[in-house]
Length: 204
Image (tube, rainbow, N blue to C red):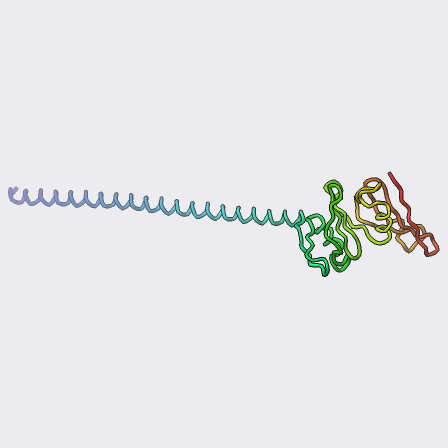
């Protein structure tokens, strides 16, 4: 074979080898770059998911706390003419709302009064008595009058343990009427059968 031709052939082979190596190197570099890009994208997506999950958990926790607070009853302030701003503690505010609020009990007629470990809050149409051991309950009407005459929560009956309720068929039937339960007894206001009513205080 012609020596010059052999040299040219060898040079071409070497050139192709170098080009192939460069292409392989370039391909490997691109693969590494793609791997790095994929890894970065995966990491970013994971961080975004974690951040979203954390935000969702925080939002759910805040909502849960708000619901819990609402269920527990939050203090409330009422502006009563001639009395000023009256702040009802959580249990009293909850009992006030449950009883029908201002439409049923009217506005406060005094500031809250501490009796023992409890609170007494008077309204135009009833009084809410609250203590840690009994909760907050409404006493009104004739039973409130009898209860007050017997010393209220500081007397022999103690704090109410339930709201006033109808008993024995209600006030429209003989021997029916209303009853309130207290720590140490009950008060009833019952129909005598002739349209008149009488109270009975029964200590425990």
